[in-house]
Image (cartoon, rainbow, N blue to C red; front, top):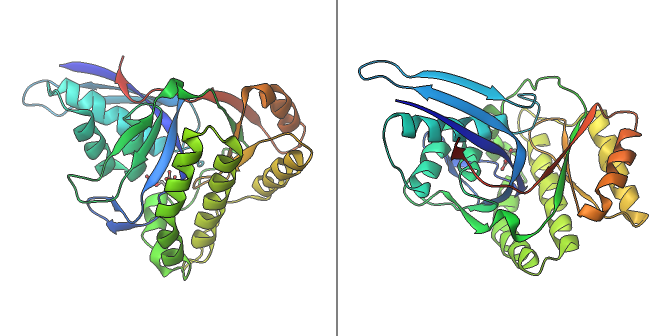
Length: 285
Ligand code: PMV
């Protein structure tokens, strides 16, 4: 049988960094994300009886630059592979299976705002906490460089616990998750943005203090961080988050989107800005 699936990139507002089980990819902390609508992976799997599956996969954005291609990639492959094998799996099982490929991939399975909880192989998966159309926020994908990272997030995470700040971050996560969930419920963009930035910087401090240290931020990344804060002080509300790579995701309300794209394009370090919104999870196409 043959099946094609699309899975979106998901952007974590509360990040996953560190595992309690490397093989099963069970996370040391819960995380919370939104799916995008446009950035993603399309994968076709053809599986004839008694043969190896034939897989064709395509990302519509650059890989290995901090834009979570492994999340959309493994989520698309999981959904296409299950369908090509004639299996009708629940969303829970698809999320669990995607997790085994790349932890964060489990959050690209359900729609909209997703929470991935800690637990064992059966209980650690992601589910929707608010649907995709719950709130129209915009996510600007700010591409600063397409230079590929030299250390993958899987390799980097194996050393997370060597940072003296690792345990402190893990301890604070549950309270951050409950505060950000209340803010999403109240549609309080300011509180969401503040928690999101704080957690992103905490995660990067953990990476930078691991042994050996890991730094994914380029000078251009720091220029964008400074600009986002400066524009905010000037009254243009927007917040950043960054994964394992140099590129930046900027969250804003629709009324500020065009102005921010214009400002980002004039920082002198931005190659391209892609507009996106909060979207659905992985599906067959
Ligand atoms: O799923 P992995 O192993 O590629 O790790 C992803 C880790 C971050 O993108 C940095 C954080 C996250 O929660 O997406």
